[in-house]
Image (cartoon, rainbow, N blue to C red):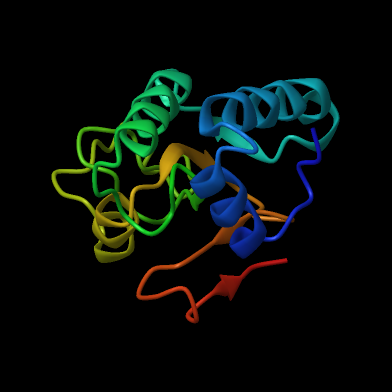
Length: 141
């Protein structure tokens, strides 16, 4: 499976059933696990991401309305709050801080149907896609 497809191609492929969000998310996690011991880019990975993607696939198959992201894997920099998760800004001073709320960008990603929130210190090739519409894409490299 090609993990280097654009956000728009990913959405189209999931919509048409050519790929499943579950497989894509599972392969993305597998890739993170295979390279992160050298890169040290991820502080944590959402352990429930594959289950969330499986739910997205069920909704796609049943024709249920879902957000614009269609389960697109998303990485969140560790200075954006995710409610009830450690948000440390990769800082010793904040190592025990538990966010009491979701940052606005996280709320928008949730509303858009993204999955696999993980904290990163480097966003490298991951994207924050489709927060407002299919024409509004923010690519972080």
